[in-house]
Structures are given as structure tokens and as C-alpha cells.
Length: 33
View 1 (cartoon, rainbow, N blue to C red):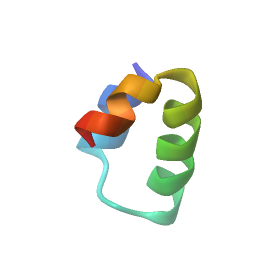
View 2: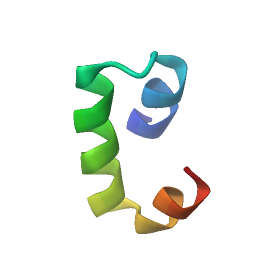
View 3: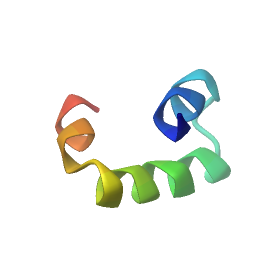
View 4: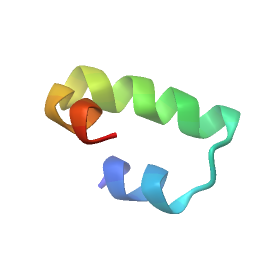
């Protein structure tokens, strides 16, 4: 769910934090990003 939210949200400071959390939870998504 968080992954979808960050994709919809623009590249903001808050989004950066979400991406960092997503990388830890789903390292596979980091490659897609």
C-alpha cells in the first residue's frame, strides 16, 4: 500500500522517506525504481 502511495505522490521530501522505508521492506522494488 505504501508503495502505491509514494508512486502517486510527487517527488517530495516526504516521498523520499517513504522510498527509504520501502527499500528496507521491499528491496526488489528499489531495482524497479
